[in-house]
Image (tube, rainbow, N blue to C red):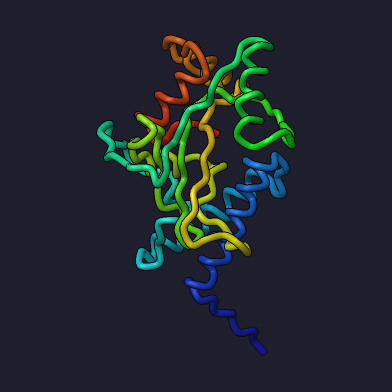
Length: 221
């Protein structure tokens, strides 16, 4: 008696593969806790790509295979922010910090608690999600209008293309943060530049800005 082969619906398998790949990308790039080997990840990615090549009608903009595209245009469309995207204010000594605290207490009262964290020097970015899908990525620009760099930001694997809906999240919401080049990745890039006989980059921040603005295949991780 021969066994019958199981027929798998391509649409169902694609959904399974995308979910697995997104989970592994989050574990690797965000949590720094990979769950599978590079070879296992590559096998999942290759299977997804082959199914999509056979069934282009099933390709979606948020598929992991759509992160890397061709050359990006250096001319970006303008993107108006839903609310002003302001810069941080610097303080270089104790007197400036105390002056800031005085302004805060004058505005909200004396019940104030501060939370301090490291300042990452990168490129300010605004990510807009609609119904759990990345809709737009924009630079700060002048604080009111920035540049639409969605195609480039989609190549950054630590940026989720989809977010699982959670209680309290509106249909459309915005996440703001920094795109930056980790020191280890920056040093690795410079070693590769030297090996290729090219000029080294000067600093991580300017390199992050350049790569995000000019090359959607940049190794921003």
